[in-house]
Amino acid sequence: MEHSWLRDYDPANCAIGAAVEILGERATFLVLREAFNGVRRFDDMQRRTAIPRQVLSNRLARLVSEGLLRKVPYQETGQRSRGEYRLTSKGLDLYPVLVALMQWGDRYEAGPDGPPVLLRHRDCGEPVQLQLSCRAGHVLTSARDVTPVPGPGARKIA
Image (cartoon, rainbow, N blue to C red; front, side, top):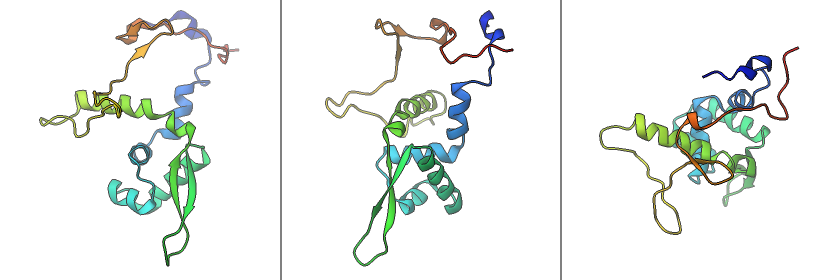
């Protein structure tokens, strides 16, 4: 159901569009997946993702320039100094997005053997699940439970 107020507002000023501009490529999500799994070094990421070296280098540079990763120098004995990539707080805030994509993929795209990875709470071992709720604590089970309203950054179409 279209909300009539939306017709009066500029869709170009969109947080989803801005996020997709930064994240919208498969390789970017694979890099973030590896970073969340604790993989920090270029060669390890390249081996685990099979992303071509130049593409991986470009994705890492973009994630650093956008403030999602930071490059930290390290040096192994007898080797030249290199950089490893660590999530920033801005990058860590993407974790629910990756969990949501993973849960959607588990539900609709997993093979007959089931999901390849399960997420468990470190403290108690119970499965992790993502859920939407309002500030009053009501759990939302569908997009139909949500009503968009103009926010402070909404711009009316001239």
